[in-house]
Length: 155
Image (tube, rainbow, N blue to C red):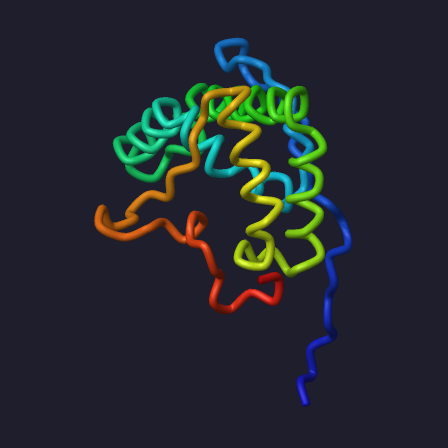
């Protein structure tokens, strides 16, 4: 047994120092993980340039990217928020069905291919954003376009 008495810190540490005016203000997205996962490929497609700028900044910052790259990070957040806003405006029913399916199936995409197909079609028809999975071999059908999902309960 240890002779030292345990010490518990129950205080939440919050830095109240405001950000400098050089860092643009942007509201938080305010979405949970299921809607973000549902929209992630569309966010990646539309915001690729902003994401690349942010990752380049973090790479060049040598460990201080959290501070040095706030401006680029805010651009990524603003772009992601615009994608979610557009999806909510044009495809709300399909979007809700897909992310609720993800929520109910432990965030596993392969359980939710039917609502995903409807969401992909709606987003492409209204926003002209096509879902593309990075790194998919050119000679294979992407997993979300296959006729039959091997492991899914929802055949």
